[in-house]
Image 1: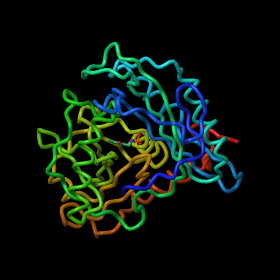
Image 2 (image 1 turned 180 degrees about the horizontal axis):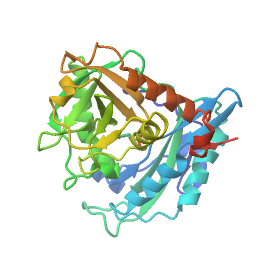
Image 3 (image 1 turned 90 degrees about the vertical axis):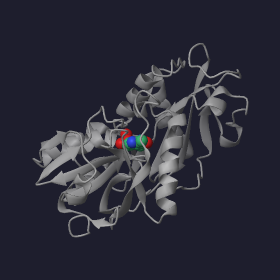
Length: 310
Ligand code: PMP
């Protein structure tokens, strides 16, 4: 679902905190012309008991971003510690005491001609907005297998979370929504299941959680990792990473998506075939419940995943 961005009052831009109106790049910028940027999406959850905002798995998001810099040969002056600090500071400066979304971006900031990744100067910026639920997480989504194939790792690696790669996501998302569905499922060039436009996919079959492996042209989602850990360690649900065939989606017991934006979003139909009884399945719901407990800092064992802002 495209949401209009109502940004917070400040952004981090060119080494400083600036009013959001001042955080602008030129049309000459390399990343604007060639898609040579990569980004993260991080949520902060409001905890009503303490009136604090808890940033979920900040360290893991920043670690993924900085590792991905290598794919685009990006050297930014900010360290992992700096980026973590900037995220916390932006929430603080905005004064938000509700759900927030942070968007750190590494981008090729030079004004130079020619598509390449080496020897082009990079910069780091970050903006923030308020964010509640991004997709319907209660009634179950109606989804469709896309006619667009997922980008392969040898074309534009999904794992990089590269800006240019989101053309692929945009095409699939629009196709699905214009046809009246809520979301798309990408297949890979070999026909196996990959992921959604901006979310990972799980199926449940006979009590086992199954999700495509890291080599299935997916982004290695942090919510994916969270759900896998909670399923196996807290709920005793076996988790298997393996290739999934398209028709497994039609005959399995449950399907759900995971993602920072999507959170844990049950699916009720795929290609107009009802999944289970056409309602969010029991395992999807259990994982969703536990996920929301964890992100609000209510499960002591996972409190280290929540960074308090205030
Ligand atoms: N796949 C894609 C293509 C995405 O854009 C996202 C959203 N970041 C995800 C999966 C889910 O990843 P995460 O759980 O880390 O947000």
